[in-house]
Image: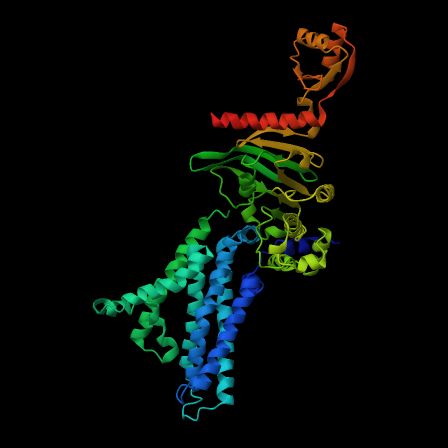
Length: 255
Length: 298
């Protein structure tokens, strides 16, 4: 082997794994475990179930594309983020961090790859939801005038809703680094906070705080104030726990 | 090439690793020995960048581990064989590592074969693996990137005698090809046969370091004679401080030559005179590490 070729081999060996490569790895980690596989299968089955139920039980106005899509996305967004939670917490609970961080010592790069993988999976789930909704409407057209009406901005909002749900899952996983509390609080905390919204004196304030602020994204084309509430709720429920998580992960002694 | 310089680590007021320095040269196997809780794992974790030392530095291949751009292709690490996702298949666990460090998937099959995990085993989920199988998977994972350095924490744990012999052969061959091996163990017998250098740690401190022969020389001489009483007085007369070995003979902290000379001067007929060998080394390991322990307790 020539000197140049040896140098090439050496360079290839020492190439830092690209973010695209790490993201592919994280996507793989989401689907290749028993729990990940069954969770994704459950998400797919639930989406299918919702589409079928809406088509059977819904009235003419429920069965238009935008409504079916909204129901499907909201359903997927319930369980899919758990895949995101587990993607982070498994590294600690199953202690694979000892392998992952030995191969990629820059921990925040690993977490960034997890976020990118989560975004990718959310978008894939969204495309599946869109396909399922469209097929169901094609098979059983509702007859309403706006059956196929789907404004571009609503397509974007539905996708954003799915992505934000996934990010919140990853953020909760990062903040707690342990599956059980992360999952329980991921579901429980928004309900508990949301319950405070029933107190009329503070219900106006709660609109800016509770995760319910995200719900309009799948239902209607939202305006300025709604966007502001989406932003504040995202800051509180996703950005804050993710920041706590990154701080913890950087310093955490993996046992 | 691994170098540890004055590594020190304190956890909530307790010094777990205390000024640990040693180096591992290419082409050699270093056995890092000590009882459980002596600080072996913490030291290895500091070398691999998992734990920040309070003082001191560790370098692998001339730099900090964390500064390696693609560590898997240079350093094979196995810190804990149980640290694999229970719900993932063995082969898949290796595929993930291979993909991360950028080696082809064919390498996964080769490594599975090397560590003797057959197709059926590789297809099973790690939850169904015995500790020995996890160790094999972990060793395959460490070797995946064809590294120059191997750092293994208690890799012999859970291996049967046959597996242990296999691992010794593997590590020896790796070192003979110019690789650097650092492996830890709490059992002398697991590493002394393969290690070129032994580093013994007790209570966080290095208590002895050297080749097996060098350490064995410190382990003293075993001597027996037809007349035990006469031997004892001859040895005592020569100021050699004999200790009974519980077998009708004595252990003496001296070279066999000095012991023989003392016996000759006392006119004693010897039936056995030899360096203390394995039993002595074992005793030395025990003495060194238990000294360190009792010191720490005080």
